[in-house]
Image (cartoon, rainbow over all chains, first blue to last red; front, top):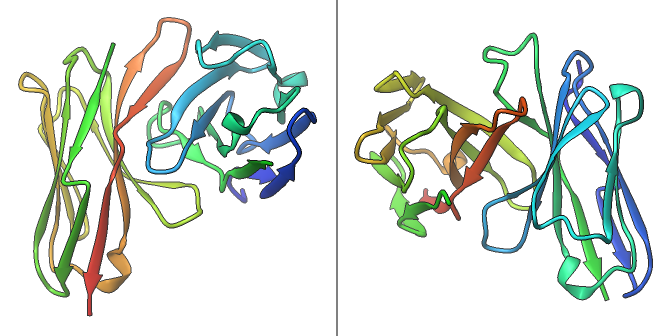
Length: 116
Length: 115
């Protein structure tokens, strides 16, 4: 068990380009969450997966954002036609059986996105 | 809509001092409350989780209390060390009914412990 991993750790892109981030949760965890954190703010919830099903989406998740979790394992978050306002840290967390409490979320190191 | 407020926004203390970080929330219908630590440019590390039926939790030099009815939690750090320097985030957890335990975070308290 190596914890939650995210790739890439940093991404610089030009406005209008598409970007995709990957999250690998702790292997036995069935719940996966994506959050966005801007400078000086706490993380804000974006979306939630239970196994492969995307069960909840925040109103923050505009049409340009899409997330998948094929086969209930790793997850990807894609942002199309990036805007400067998308610049943020994107955090992934997982939870599930095996934790002290099944609702305890374990966070990855995040992907820092800068849109120029 | 749940709102979480953390006071102070920043705190600087000399090494060895005991300190208290405050967190308040507007909706008392929470599942539990968690305190996290975040180092610059890094992800979050869970420190303590308090169930809604509990009053406090302790881990080493950390003690967190919860008063759900008044919408308050405190994180007490004893005998602070320079390695405690980080941003401390409070998050309330609500079960959404779709299987999601959704976290709502405060903006954090940035702690600096001066050697």
